[in-house]
Image (cartoon, rainbow, N blue to C red):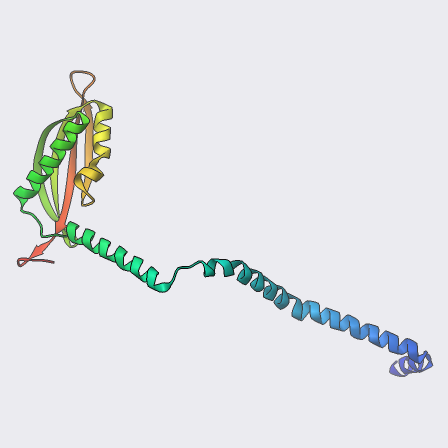
Amino acid sequence: MMKSVFNVLCKMNHRLLAGVMLLLAGVLLFEGWLLLLHKPYAEYQQIRVNRASLAPASGQTSDPSGELGRMAEDIRQLRARLSGEMSTPASDEEMAASLLTALDHSAATHGVTLSGVKPMEKKQVSLFEEVVFEVSATGAYLQLCEWMLDFGKTLGSNATVTDFDLKMADAGRQVILTMNISLYRPLIKNGAVK
């Protein structure tokens, strides 16, 4: 079979044979480019486009010293806030008086009548002591809602409402609110804050 193929090739015109060989070599190169080089070349083009689009953004960044100064200021503010929240814990009486004062002032602002604040049990939660107070108040429903929404400003971030109950009062338009407010302070072990 090889001999007959060789005989046919020998009888062909040499120019036609060279043209066919060049055509086959061209097809093989094109296939090789498609299979081996096309994907990496497309990825390279995408990387160039991405680099060109990111170049303006990288030129707009501020100098490192200004960035460090801003970060140092942020850290200083966070430390001040954390030290304020983690300050030496107050006694139970001071904590209850502070809570009563803050709630009474906030209740008066929102048109709510504070009925009572009663200290409940204390328990350890991780590295903090949880002090729970039962708070009772009376007022219109919307005023009570606004009052409760204002607790973030009134009590700060170390207080949580853990349970509440709403009941209609005898007057019809008044609502009685009973809730538990948990305050957290750092746990004291052997005279030092843990």
